[in-house]
Each structure stands twice: as C-alpha cells, then as structure tokens.
Amino acid sequence: MFEYLNGVITYIDPTYVVVDVNGVGYKVQVANPYRYQQDEKATVYVEQIVRDNEQALYGFYNLEEKKIFLHLISVSGIGPKSALAILAGQDLNGLIQAIETNDVKFLTRFPKIGKKTAQQIILDLGGKISQGQMVLGVEPTVLSNGNQNLEDGMLALESLGYTTRDIDRIKPKLIKENFDSADGYLRAGLKLLTK
Image 1: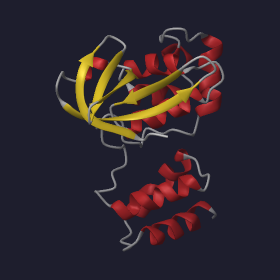
Image 2: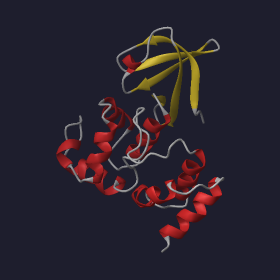
Image 3: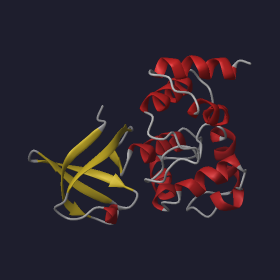
Image 4: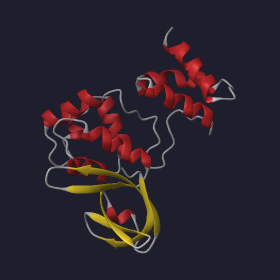
C-alpha cells in the first residue's frame, strides 16, 4: 500500500521511529532506529504487513534494504522481526555473500536463526539476490558507470525471471556496449543469455 514516508523523525525508540508526515505520526519498526536523527527530515521506505492480530509498518533506510527484507520474509520460518534482526547487522554484502557461498555459520549468528533455518535461507534465496546490488551505498562489484539504460535493461531481465547470478555473468559484456535505450541492453542481454 505504501512505498515510502517522507517526513520528520519526531521520536526514536530502540525498535521503532515515528515519522511525522503532514501532522500524522507513523510508527515504523526499523532494524536500526539510531541511523536516524531526532527532528531530521527523512525518507523511510516502508512495507505494511497485516496479520490476524496486528498491522505494522516496517521501515528501511533505502530501497535495496527493503528488497532484501522482502526476500527474507519469503523464506519459511523467517518473520518480519527476524528479518529486521538480520538487517540490523548492516553487513548486507556479507549476508549476500553467505547466501551465495552456502555459509551456514555466518547465518546462524543472527538471533533465532538455527542451522535448519540458515539452510532454508540458502536454499530459497541462492541466486535471487546478488552482491552486484547496491547495498547501503556500496557500489556494485561490476560497475555500470552510471548508465541508467544499462541498469533498466538489467532490471527488465530480472523481471523476466533471470537470476542475478546469470545477469551478473553477462553484465561485463554489456557494459562495453553503447546502446541509447534500455531496450537495446535488454535485447543484447537476451541474446547472451540464450546462447
């Protein structure tokens, strides 16, 4: 329902912040509320989750963090609070690396994540999220040189069902191209992926 809230942080609690948007205070549960400052103007990306006995807004510092949260809660045994606990570590590149390299030990260091749940995370998310994503302001491992058409083309490939692992494999070849539209990168990417 909501994509983000743009307002002033009026209250900071150990588990949530209150974002005042035009006189309405939204209580937003976040992984690390102390990333925000009291009375600062901020954009908080949100996901509304409605359960039988509660309705809650979960907030994220950036869109990449939100995407990883959505991936995490899609795993059986991971609820929103567990996903926030994982995000609180702020080592999202380490998290992605652990998933891609089957590092169960790294994943079990998070609260309420046992060996079985860690293995389920690896099974469900392997190949779906990649270190090539922008995470907490860290540049991707393969730079696109600020080429928005290339990025849009890669997102289109992902929406067609190709894994980020497949896309990252062909991205270096596409960076060398100079198409003037996302469609050009999409078509070239499809050719490379279907060889």
